[in-house]
Image (cartoon, rainbow, N blue to C red; front, side, top):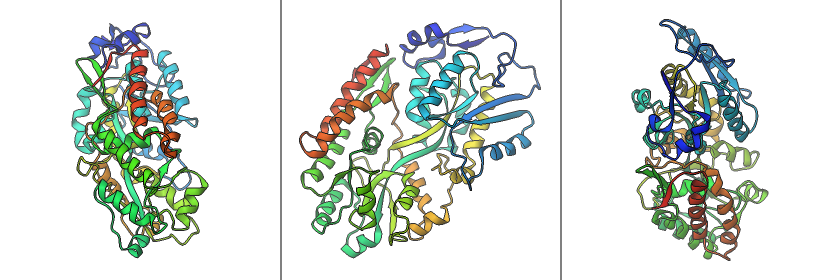
Length: 447
């Protein structure tokens, strides 16, 4: 007998908001057979080979250690647990749609890569397995903050794979010329920004095209916990004291004209960094390689460096901007074996770094030579790993998190041009969070 969600009870069950599997679904006995995905749909006899399928969207580009080659090593060493990996080439949103369709047709994969913001939505739709009992033994392999993003309430649905902790990139050569050091607190940052702006140099930008994930990552870095579950009800605290500190941080610098408001992914940012006008950026760890590409063939080689964030009031802390984990999907016949592979795969650090990932696993990452050269010989990935360790341990996402993006985006231009306060970004997200949850039939209240 296996506890499963029935399609007709998924929404109703999710209203129990993250209680036990028993509270969320009906008991259903499996019948014999094996799905086309290779995941058996019935119990296996002792000694039967566990067939695990894994759907991912890793880049698998030239010069990278291919996913199938990593999996082949596992299969060679584990004849009783055989894994088949398949790459999904479409957009992340399309992969989520495919997963929902396939799982509802009893043809889903056993393991799938999910963005951290997607995890709660897939959970409340009944599309993931509860693997809490198997996850405990792997806790030491990952930081607490990254593990928490593969949980909904107290339920673990998988293991983290890569992260995008917020860090600070800066032009060390320009800092040295100006006689300034990396700010260690928010107030020091504000003061330094004013000083360098007077010299025509900007230690940060307010990005007009980086919104939901970027701002939530900074709020998490200030110690914010936007979403939690108490007594089977979602608590929403987006417009919090911690978020207010972040709003005040940017408001002060925008009012003082000590940071420009411009597109992070636009020509002005690229030109500003190349010309040594923009000499710092608060961004995600995965931008380390992208900044190298942005300033390719300029005289910035060897000048830049990476630091942990300044203290926004919660001590040395970071928050997530992007990243994904590998979840055990509903219908997986071998969740224990799937988690064993899941842990092994996501701790193959050297291989995953070649895929461009900042891994969630706690072991040391080797900085690629090209990145080390651009950042003046710095062991960049050691700093990025420190940011992983500093990840807000209490941060998690809510179901339908993507729904708050439009209201945050609507408030952004006015904040950027000074016609409305930055704090409107958070107050709008507070309202849209409550609406998204209640529209989905989930009990929610402002904290």
